[in-house]
Length: 432
Image 1 (cartoon, rainbow, N blue to C red):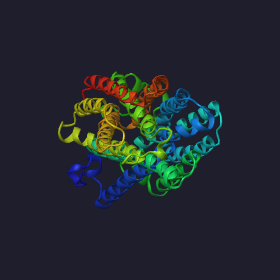
Image 2 (image 1 turned 30 degrees about the vertical axis):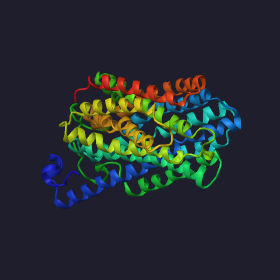
Image 3 (image 1 turned 45 degrees about the vertical axis):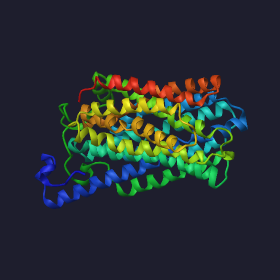
Image 4 (image 1 turned 90 degrees about the horizontal axis):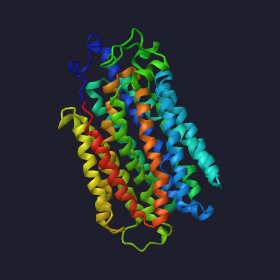
């Protein structure tokens, strides 16, 4: 954990009175805790579809191919929203964007629960994807307002780590709703997303947008890019230009695109693989619904570890940590093909698969302000996230069609292995 001694603070802060330093420290920790707490509940509004697949198929006769398109539409709308909302986070502020996203996503989840046709589900879930995109990039911008580059590995490790634990909640809530409360699939979309209101309320009451709002100096200049006299003078076109003309964006985008496609292949289809249509009547020694929870727990812990490893073991060379995790993820996914469903080995390997697949996310996102600077951090994060979710969306209908055609849900694991291997190759080209 980074210290708060004067020598660790930016030059702009070392000349401030002691009470100002104490105030700045208090506000920056409130920003980190408030943003991560708000995002902790975001995935309960978008990563629950896998648990409803069987119910929707049973009630309305949709195929896995059609459900794959519904999932892909959400991911592509999320991707397009990232491109727009990352810039809006720079322009309007991350706090307002995150709160609005949580409220609007909750509303569209409720709308989705009343669906009954393919097109109704597709449009509602797509709208939800756009509103969900109002969270991550604006939140990244808010954090970059308060934390300088020397602490960025730690901060993004915490931020992405909490998003990993958000995946845990997105798995645990449906399990409780379906298995413990014995409610139908529609209640996944009505009850689980209510938690987003709690996160939005904490952000509203306890977090300030930026140091300047509290008469404090900003944490740092805009990284390696010479700053203008007033950072708010940048237009949207100038922000996009600064980001899009940097070639590292495209290498990093390909690398995280393959990684995110592997992640969502697991998030959406692992519940289908382990639960199936008759999971409530399973006679297995270990309840399949609890096996699936090993995946998001592994993802959460993996994301907490990777950026820390990149700082401590690899001296800030984030690409090295990314490559190692992707290679290990590919290897673990191959082993998953041969593991019986209800076994301790399945739990252990699924945990490791999630750990290594999602782990590099924290290092990927820490690269955004590292490369582009604080003033366009939201725009850069949004553009990069757009690229990553385009890849993720392409995979969903393809995997759904392959499962429909073969009847073999374990096919997701060699697909994940190939995607992780591709991400490892592309990540070797990142030098930061």
